[in-house]
Image 1 (cartoon, rainbow, N blue to C red):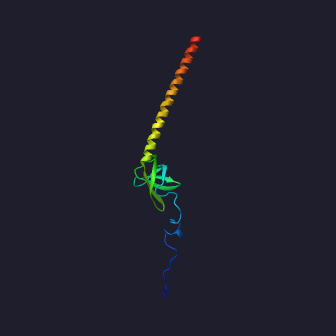
Image 2: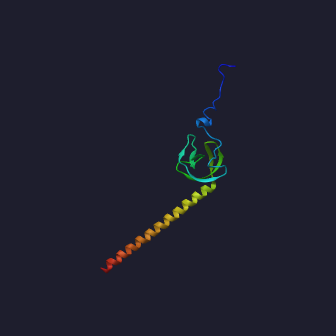
Length: 128
C-alpha cells in the first residue's frame, strides 16, 4: 500500500462544497422568453448588462440607461445572453411618440388657460 495515497475531498474550487455554481438550481429565465429591461451598466466587452430577477443578462448593442425589450437566446450557470427585439424598438418608438403628443396637448391646454386668465383680467380691469 502506498504510504501517501492520493485522496479526494469532494472536488476543487468549482465544486458545490466551496460555494461554486449549482447546475441543479432552476434559472429565473429560459431560452425564448421575452422581457422589458433597463440596461444598468456596460460590461468590459461593451455589452449592456440588465438584470431579470437579479440574474445577469448580457445584451449586445445596448447602452447604459436604455430601456428595451429583449429575448433570451442562451442561458448559462451564472448569466444569460439576450438580444434586442424589433417589438421592443417599435414599442419604445410608440411610447416616445405618445409622450410627445401628450406633451403637445398639455402645452396647448396651458396656453388656452393662460389666454383665458388674461381675458378675465382684462374684463375685470374694464369693469373697474
